[in-house]
Image: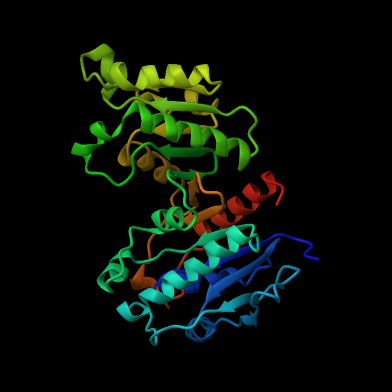
Amino acid sequence: MRTAPLFALTPGEPAGIGPDLSLLLARHAQPHALVAIASRHLLAERAQQLQLDVTLLEVAPGSWPTQPAPAGSLYVWDTPLQAPVIAGQLDQANAAYVLQTLMRAGEGCVAGDFAGMITAPVHKGVINEAGIPFSGHTEFLAELTHTPQVVMMLATRGLRVALVTTHLPLKDVAAAITPDRLSRIARILHADLQDKFGIAAPRILVTGLNPHAGEGGHLGNEEIDVIEPTLEQLRGEGLNLVGPLPADTLFTPKYLEHCDAVLAMYHDQGLPVLKYKGFGAAVNVTLGLPIIRTSVDHGTALDLAGSGKVDTGSLQVALETAYEMAASRGA
């Protein structure tokens, strides 16, 4: 019998800093069993390059660990590379390898083998250049789990920011904020704050779209036509939503100290504030999935791979967040 939850870690792009982060993390014992889904050979080579003494303990379905690995050790579910890896140099040949690690982690979560998955950064460009359509972790896992709507939320200590729209040109944002979309996003945020974060009655602050939240229609009508009526309807369903509030005043202690999350209308409205507050110690959480998935808040940093000059802060927060979310669900 397993005495602690088991989590999956995908190191992402093999030429990036994901393998480095995984090995550096292994220097310290984790509170739960953590399995890196990666090439054992890759990790061994990178450990040698970094001059790290890390023991790689091979595991696989049917022989999962029942206890956390000791400090200086890392459980590895060996996933073969398609081509040799040179730190910092992308190779299209390994695009399928990256997706295989994600598939193994996602399917393991769905099957109940893993209580959650933590992802290091992938390089979308090289995967697409290999002829494999790939928009990102979020879309990949949504398709894998047959989830029609997911929500991107970034969090750092003391602040959570979810987004109504994500990677859209600014000129397309207003049209994308519809009553249906806003309702679905808000309901998912509310439900996952309850289910995955253990917050019984979440209080969510909602930004307006326009400066001064439209200033009564003088600076835009989206608040009057879409946002305010939708929020009022959702309040009738029991959601505690405050807003729409001007974004330039919402992100102040007066408001933030009394909320559980902020729902921002677009990417660069909410995330600059969060990244200023917690860059390097923030986590990307995909809400709406039937599984737990957290990720680092940075990219592959190819120029730092193999250098030993990387910070594990964001990965550690991603791990801690996944552990807390699993505990809230009783995993």
